[in-house]
Length: 435
Image 1: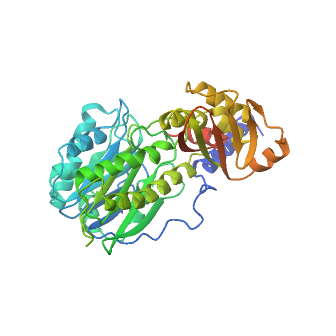
Image 2: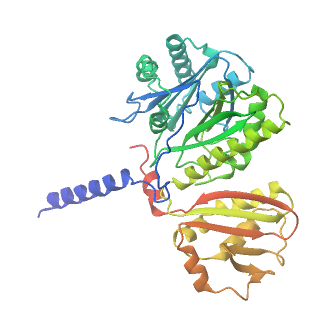
Image 3: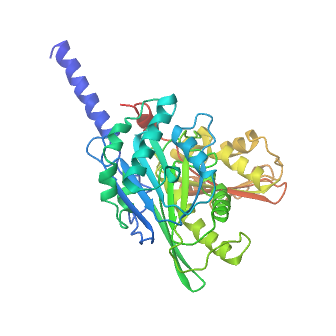
């Protein structure tokens, strides 16, 4: 074999390995039952299609349309480089309540972020096209884009598919819509819940995309939740913003906040349940509790699909100076590459947890600090617990779902955050993301 043949053979082997890693199998942490069978939410229809924004041979655009009278709320990334789509959505939501119908169009493959004036023009062109086809006022057309940053969005390809999307709208189209917004996700993420208020049924369904660049700051990735409850816009926004802090704002995969994070909630009012107008009412609390189930489920699924993840890790911090302090400590531990790689290697290296507590900058009593791996007391009174054995720690770390609990010994503050491990596969995915 001459030199050229050897090079050709090496290139062929490299291509084979690249192909193997570029199409990852479904995350081992994915729900065993797959995408849930979502019930119909009266007043909402979905559709999806392929526009070849980046991906060939798959759907990459989705449309959601809601009836007149729909209330809408949203939370978005606070990134200083947030996308043109995010800025447009924030501006429109700031206009307040409206009885007009709602349309939401989302594309994957291109984030339309850091694209300057061209990004704004793309948003306007898409919104105008959706408005023309659906008769939804432009001020009630919302968009989102997810994918590569800094590349012009080929919005002409999307606009060419708007009529097709409108013609395909169906109350059963949620799963297709969830699949269309995926980027490096290995599975579509859906969740549901239902409640009865005033003797009447209310449905809540949602879907999300997210796998990498996950450290939400105000919102997360792309998430769309729909309910047929009747809720005043101001109440809906207050409930969403509150629940977001303990769900999507309490997860992290890699400590990086996206330029496109968007979470939107629509309430069509098509249920016969009484309208919720008071944030302090029992009905509002009941609705919030049901919504929390969906948001918690979706946020944890995003972590379970973290790029290259093999372990799901829940971190509980208690005994903190405040709830906010506890969350800061929890995220310091969750975002530590040393903690995450130890979890990947099934190493019960509790010293790295101690490090995470210390680097957070939050109050903690060294001599009262206690740490548990699951139910195993690992450290107490400022040192390793006399009852702890390394064999017990090693055995526990072999589980796919793990919990680390820290008691800081300084107060009553408490918080829970969720993350995943950091594996070589994360480097493979992100070392060649744009190709």
